[in-house]
Image (cartoon, rainbow, N blue to C red):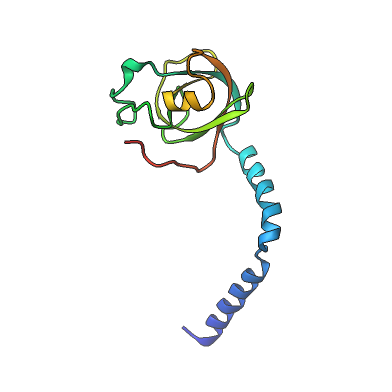
Length: 147
């Protein structure tokens, strides 16, 4: 390669480096960018109903092939892609939990999510059977694979 090529690359890198926002500017731009990305998602937040797995499912295989562990932050949903990280918010108490979809549940006429027992406990669902929640799929987030 010739010298003008490398000087052109160096000028491009310098221009990009100078245009990058500072830490203070990024703290203002970051949340706005995140909101914009969430709005552009093919999945939108929806109100729905949450319940949790019965004890008898412990150790059984989920649709993803992993065994259900009540201590992991996992959930079942009828249509979200397996591996999707979802924020489940209890609007009554403002408690929330992030879970990974690793199983399917029976189709229902309304939005529905079936949480692991640990996730249910974290949002105040344990012992109540079912509650209304807001289900928010998170973009490009993937939690560690459940074991």
